[in-house]
Image 1 (cartoon, rainbow, N blue to C red):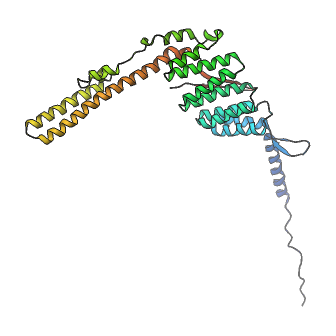
Image 2: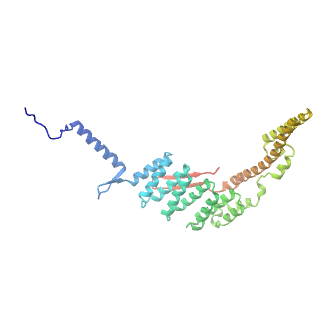
Image 3: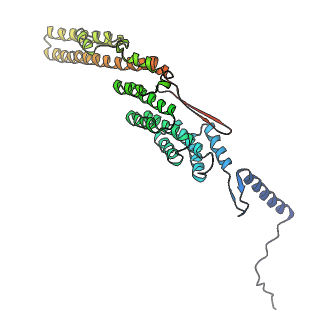
Amino acid sequence: MLRRVSTGAARKPCPGPAAWGCMVAAVFFLVCMSADVQGADSESGKFCISPESLYEFAEKNYKSGDYLAAAIEFKRFSHFFPDHPRAAEAGFKAGMAYFQIPRYGDAINAFESVVKQFPSSERAVEAMFMISRCHAGRNNIREAVNVLEAIAVRAPDQDDRDRARFESGRLKLESGDLSGARLSFDKITPGNRRKYNVEQILRDMDDPGRIPAKSPFLAGMFSIVPGGGYLYCGRYREAATAFFLTIGLAAASLEAFDNDMYAMGGLVGLAGAGFYGGGAIGAVSSAHKYNRKSYSDYIQQHIGSRREPGFSLGIGSDSVMVSFHWRF
C-alpha cells in the first residue's frame, strides 16, 4: 500500500485578526515614542537623535540632582553637536554638574574643553574662573592663583581682568601671602577699585594689630604653671585637665617616695613630667591655631564680606542657571 510522503516544509498557521491588530498597534506605539525623541532626516529617511531632546534630557537630570547623568549627557551633546548654538553652554554645564558632586578633576577637564573648543564664547572666561575654583576646592591654591593670573592677562573684558585680580588677591590673603595679595589688589583698575572696596581692604591689611592674636612665647611661659598656657589661649577645659592631672601625678609620686616605693614613685613622676612638658607644647600649638583661626575669621568678616559672592549666572534661551559657592 502506497503512502503519500510530503516533501514540503510544515506550514505555519497564519496570524489571526487579533494578532495582526496587536502587531500594528505595537508598530504604531514605537513610531509615536520615537517621534518624541528623534527627528527624521528627509534625505536619507533615517532617524537621528534630536539635539533639543538630548539637551532637555540632560537639563532634566541636572534639575533632579542626578549630576553624574547630567554631566554625561551634556558632554554627549557638545560632542555630537559641536556647531549647535548650545554646545558651549552644554560643555559648561557638564563641568558644573561635576563641580556639584564634587568631582573636581572631571570638572576641570570639562571646563578646559570649553576653553579649547569655544575660546571666543562668553562661557570660555567663566569656565576659567570655575577651573580656578576647582583647584581651590582641592586646596591647590597655587594653581588656582595661576589660572586667575592668566585670566587677568588674557581676558578681553576689563571687568573680568579686575575680577580675576580680586579673586587672586583674596586667595593669597587667605593663604597668608600678604605681599602677593597687595600686588593683586593694587593692579585693579580705578574704575573697579570702588566696586571691590580695594582702599578699605588695603587699610585693613596695613593694620594687622586689629586682628586678635596670642603670643606662642607667652603661652609657653605661662605653662610654667600647669595649664596656664591653655588658660591664656582661652582653652579652659584643657587648662583644668592639665592643672589637676599634673598636680595629682606630682602628689602621687611624692606619696610613693614617702612610703619608700621608689620604683613606683619614679614611674609616676616620669609620667607627670611628660604630661607637664606636653602641656607646654600643646599650649604653644594652641596659640598658633588661635592665630590662624583669628586671621581666617578676620578675612571673612572684614574682607570676605566686601567681595562678590562666588556665583555663576547662565542665561539660556529657555532657562537660567545659578551656581553659588561658599568656602568654609
